[in-house]
Image (cartoon, rainbow, N blue to C red):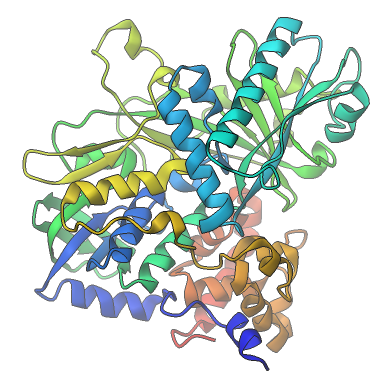
Length: 526
């Protein structure tokens, strides 16, 4: 075996997360020493902060009460937006930042996970010519953002108009009667948002960060946190020179004076055959709105997502948001407005909702406090009176810039952030990814580690079996997640390292397999 082949069949050095590593590193973190930085929250932003700080040479401890990507970061539309919506709202700085960060992910840091996604806006009788002209102007403006961000056309193609025949080819389930063509646009799409977070956390670990899940912060201060190990119930203290609160919609529960206004985004999960082959996603205009669309998002795993809503959430913030029937009805109504045969409620196989952590700066009771869709998505880095740094707002696309700004605000180092040019675990140039001896589906999920995942199945044919019939995830992928990706229980495997759990019936069928795989996982690697 050549050195290159050998490298392809192992995990990235120092990046493997497993139960044994967690035990060792938690004991070290709570052992009385003082780290440079404690990060609380391991969604995209928190994992990004841990990576940014560790890559600058800081001693980092990062904790989460649950698992990697347990909260908002696993409930997104899986899109890496270029900022078109923010451009239309006049938020030019936010739009440009989004386009730049999209280009960073697609060309340098995660080209294995983030690729171009085509979208068709079908010009049905419900879309007036004025609306079509406005949408086309928006797509052209979005392409100008792409150019301003220096993202090549080879990576993200330019928009164009479609004939009726072309629109039907890309969107065969759209009603043909009255269809006068379509508008084709492109944006970035991440294979799986939770996998992006896992890659961030593992890359941080490879740079020395201690990444600790199931560790709940009970209280925060400028010199650390009291914590509880959720696996054992033991409590202790982690000391640090600076603390970053990156807990998203839960941030206000750890620091005083922070007003976070959660906004619920709901998606439906459909079997892909219900809408037929979809070479592209769909933009479906919401009636009565000038710049709001429902998106149809084919996932390539036999499922299609339809979303999303933007509704304010009042009261206590749950760990896992419930999906109200009103959201489901709204999405089905908008989807049905363009289909030959509308989707029935009993054809919805699953649904999920995420809560966006929007920083509310409006005056309570004022008209501008009414709609969460009108609150800026610009992120904010705030330092509380006692010195805890909180990063809130923003979105998945801009996690890297949010992390950079948060680490800068801590004032621990004058070293510049290297993360705009730092490949995540599994990343490589497109030609290198194309040459990997592994199926394309694995490469899109694991990048350069895909041959190592495949090798598990080659050594043990039982691991080549799918976790459940009709779903592409194999048992080898679950074993890899337990050995290298920090999965500690079946929910980690089914709900975040894979997305089998989005359909409850599939989750129930897969649970025994997940438990079996965990029982055979060892902390010593493959």
